[in-house]
Image 1 (cartoon, helix red, strand yellow):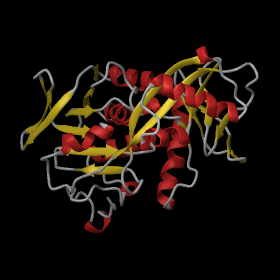
Image 2: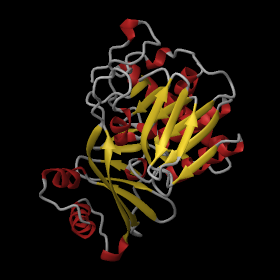
Image 3: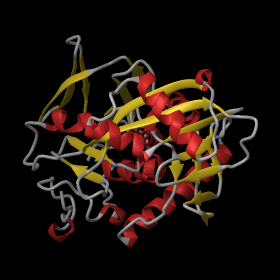
Image 4: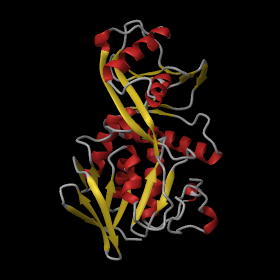
Length: 333
């Protein structure tokens, strides 16, 4: 692996990319992070309920990784100028779950982008990567504009865009991480709202800043997936208001502050993917990216420095460069 001072390129400015880039910068890498959108954490990360939790995570190693993510959120947020994590019990279908809390994804992005820049790194938005080129001398990200950004190593943390950028690199089996479209609405909280974080089969809600809620509806998302509801903000808002009303949450037409839609990364077996595609190219993708970002960021950064992390055993993409013993390459994708 490249020693301290090497050039690292991170593709993807969601929670995972930011966490990896910040940890790698702390470890001494000269980091450049590229995000195709005009702002950080606006695609999958921005359309998440952002509930950091370990509920029903299987196997036990995945649950342990999630719990470590929650602990690191709490510790990192407490030390930050602008905290991003709030411990909060959840009412999950009538059962109180005390472990976990909510993440302010925008505050997380600001804190980690600031940490990268404070260590001399570069964070660029509006920088869409068309392809990755790599050989024995290094790696290059070719942007849609034709600009070439060089590095010694590349980390792909591009969510559902990862498979396309991996194509043609190494001997990886094709990776399917494109999950269904998710939807999150940001609304004004009614004066009567007194609940905190609630997770239900049809409707989930959580506070988001002063006087606002984030709403997610599993039944609405299912209707989008089966084609019975068009991917249209006004149509979705009408459906969501009706759903919310059935759950005692009365919303006016002008309460909607914004609606976000995005395909969420979702590896086939539900487990994160983390490992080397080639000796120049590392890939990390997870469905529970918000929960796992702090711990995966540190573990991946350590592996970039050549230190195998036992916690990532079993999460390697099939056909990855063997930086572990062969029996550890057991990811079921």
